[in-house]
Structure formats: structure tokens, C-alpha cells
Image (cartoon, one colour):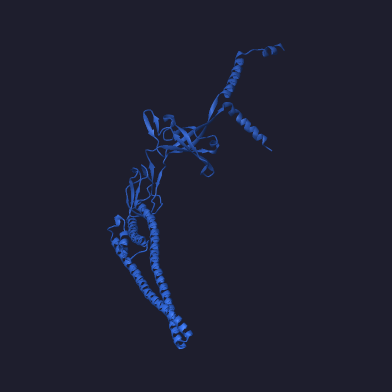
Length: 441
């Protein structure tokens, strides 16, 4: 019994020290796990893109290829000629439009001159000179052959118009002269009627006195009645002539109004056609300009799709691409749904270029510029959010060397989204296990 008690009371300094060190290490680790924090990093893949993006070159109009001045890999400057199309059809169309437009402008000058000349009641004297004075074509068309033709046509129209007016005026003057004659006859008959009226009154008194016979009285009365009848006939004839003259004057005004109306109608037609031609001319000019396909930016030609001179390129087809050079670049990354909820604009990012291993060359700093509002499906069932990141520099500096960032380079992106205490990593599996266990049936 005493032997057993002695064995239990044996003190081992090494054992005690081991236990103490173990406890101290555990307590130290526990304290460190409560005090120290580590970064939570979101990892994404991406590539470098020019801010202006790759430019797709397409023809605006279909056409036959006349010349190709570039190949894949050719460095081109902004505005440099890339491809020439045969402009024959476009130039011909533009020439046709301009020719019709010039003729219509000259015709408009003729119509406008006639309309303005007819704005007042035209008189025989001076109308021709007034109309010809109003005929004015644009200075650049003054020597156009059609300008003289339209001037001759204007003179012919004026002569035809004046001839019609002269004929009506002649008939009006004839009726006016006839009216004067009839008025004279009415006046003559009226004067005779006054005399005959006195004779009739005298005959009535003589008949009452028995001086003359009733037969003689009836002769005087018959002469008076005949004069009254003649006056009514002349008055009726005068009214008819006045009516016919008024109708002729209305006809004269109708000739003027009809001619002016027809000229105004033609003016409206020309205005409408000129407006249409102006639109067609703008399209034709743009088509002529589009016959020379030029580089939209400075860059390198890529994916050239045509090589045959004489071939036909359809409007809107992609002919080539130009990868911009000497421009600012940005990084377009893809991040998973698990990380995107903790990312926001303005966060800093570390950009590691796959072309330059970070263990040797280091990495670039960047800043998140934009996070897409919706995810995109990269592969079946794999959804990622596009994120735009601006690198701090357009090159990776290593010692005295600078390696430029080129469009198309792939990168790995690390974004610090949060910090967590170490202790949370120990308790996270325990909490998850308990939650799953409590959720079981």
C-alpha cells in the first residue's frame, strides 16, 4: 500500500512543463485567433481590353471592291485608307440627282417670276419686262443651257397669256363701244319721247276742244307708244351688253387666276421634289464618301475577311477588325455569384498577369470602376458577373524594364472584400454542422 502511494506522489518536472507549454500554446492561439484578422479575397479571371474596344469595320453600302491596302497585322493610323470600293454607281447617281436638282431650280426661277408678276392685275404695257426682270436663276446656274431654255419658255408663256388677255380686252372694248352706241340711242329716243309726250298732251287738249279728229289723236298716241317701246328695247339691249362685258371682265380675272393657280401648283410640286432630292443627295454624297473605307482608330488590322479585288461586299458585313494601340486599357474580369455580393465600386484590386508570373514580376494595382447589373452565362450552368477594373498603370514595371499591357492578355484578379477573425474559421464548420443537424427531420 505504501509503495503505490509513493508511485503516485512521484513528481515529473518534464511532464509538468509539457502540460504547461501546451496550455500556454493553446491560450496563445486562442488569443491570436480573437485578436488577429485576415483578408477575405474574391478571385476572378479576366483579360485586358482597350477602353475604346476593338473596332469592327463594316461597309455602309454594298459595292464592288476596287483595292485592298492592308493585311492582317498591318499597323494603320486613324483615317488611313483601308479598302476602296468602285464609286462609279454612286458618282453616277449623285450626278443624276444634281442635274435634276439644277433643272428644277432653274424652272423654279421661271415659275416664281410668273407668280410674282401675276401678283398684281397685269396690264398690257410693261408686263413682259416686269416678268423677265423677276426671272433670276442662282449665279452658279446662270450659264446652264437650261436657263436660256426656261427664259424662252417664260417669254412664250407671257406672250400666250397676254394674247388671251388682249382677246378678252378687245371683246370688252367692243362691248363697251356698243354700250356707248346703245346709250346714245336711248338718249335720242328719250329726247324724242319728251317731245312726243308734249305733242300727246297737246293733242288731248285739242281733241277735247274738238279741233282735231280722234284719228289724228290716235296717230300722235301711236308715235308716243312706239318711242316708249324703242326705249325699252334699247335699255334691254344695254343691260345685256353690260352683263356680257361684266362676264368678259370676270373671264379676264379667271384667266389670270387660273394661270397663277397652275403656277403655284407647279411651284409646290417643285418644292416637294427639291426636298426629296436634297435627302437623296445627302445619301448619295455619303455613299460616295463611303467608297473609301478608312480606319476609325490607330491600331493593328485583325481578322481581315476579304482578299479578292473585284469581289462584292455586302452592306453591314464585317470586313475586318482593328485592335487599338496607344490607348488606355482596362481589365474586364468575371467573378462568381459567391463573391459579387461583397464587391463594390472603388475597391482596390491586385492584378496578376499570366504572361508575367507574379512570383518574379509582381502585380499591378487597380480599382473597380463598374459592376454589371446582371450576370452572364459563360458555360452551361456557370454564371459570372462582368466587372470593369482600371489598372493604375498601362505597364508592369520590373526593375528598369517596363512591360506594356497589351489587349488580349489574360489576368487573375484578387479583390479584398472583407476581413475576418481567425476564430470565425474554427467555429464556422461547427455552426454549419449544428444548423444542418437542427434542420433534419
